[in-house]
Image (cartoon, rainbow, N blue to C red; front, top):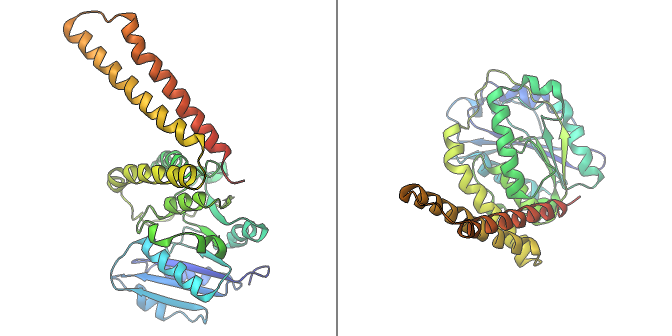
Length: 310
């Protein structure tokens, strides 16, 4: 136990034969349960797990590679069945320093619903991060803020997280993405339910392991996922649960922006092709909706930031 709370550590593992035993060896003594979800590994991960001598260890087997999100959902469901107070997610690649586990758990003991590591709060740690990961995380962070409404959260792709049982039971796990969008989806669901999220400064450890996610995967799937989650969150939080002017500002702003940009492009193309200058009055029919739409969208974002659970 940790400060009167029962703790379970959930480790999703796919082909992690070189790291899994060292990760499990580093888990402190105070977690009550260690759940490893072997996600259809084709290497010797299962054999490595079977050699671990730890009475706390519970192994869940996926018959095929279901994805990190699906594995965590199975782990979370096991935590709910076992009645633990806090469920911690730890990746099996050895990048998450487990000596910082108490730092991650303290916010939940103090009353937060969800805590996650943040590799960007220490400048020294930023120097260790590969430049490609740094740039990618900055872009994904902004898109996640917009989609999830968790505007005070940075480094959303950080999988070192902890959630309390009350928040876990609120979330519809069937809606959570089964693959690499899992962490982003969790933030969306937590915001919809008004759960409080805390960023915790925790450095990452970078070795020779390769990330399982590819740039092509991000570019082909994440934009559509962000858009769908954004629309769903706005509808759930600001229309169905409690109607707010935020939804009205966004809809009107988006319509005016679309008209302003579309009509403005049409006028520019027509003027270029015909070599006839467009009148000022006609130009204003594109400019005014564009300005007003931008102002409405900006105001909606400001109000959304203010609605972030503190």
